[in-house]
Image (tube, rainbow, N blue to C red; front, top):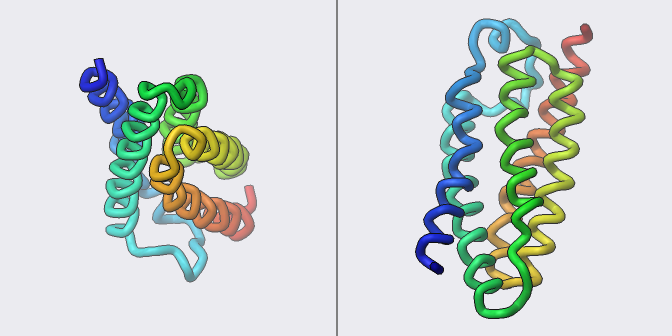
Amino acid sequence: MKAAGSIILIGLSLAPGLGGRLYRPGQWYLSLELPPFTPPAWVFPAAWSLLYCLLALGAVLAWLGARSGRGKFPWTVFLVQGALNFFWSFFFFGRHNIIFSLIELLALILAVAVLSARFFSLRRAAGWALIPYLAWLGFALVLNYSIFLENPA
């Protein structure tokens, strides 16, 4: 049961990355005024690959902590953050809605903060695994907000 749960969690951790594969930057994004601190394009897939792996590691560690009697695994918040992560790409790149993607990103940050706190309660290493994810989301929030400011609708 531990192995099956771990495999499911790894798959669910990596699944939101499909949003980035389905909804790519494209011409619309290239036409935007971007802030000078926007990373080069190659940074995004590299960063997200690492972050999804850390999320999977944290989820498996939390799952194992929950299985050893430290509490219940936070399935709801885990799935909510995954859905929010997936749909940010849809709203930003797919629908070209900068303001809604910004609001959605705030919800994602809140969900990941709650998830991290729950992971910490199950196993400290699981919580720490999400700190880079939260840091990147904070940067993404500043970047998204700056794009909003520089590209008024």
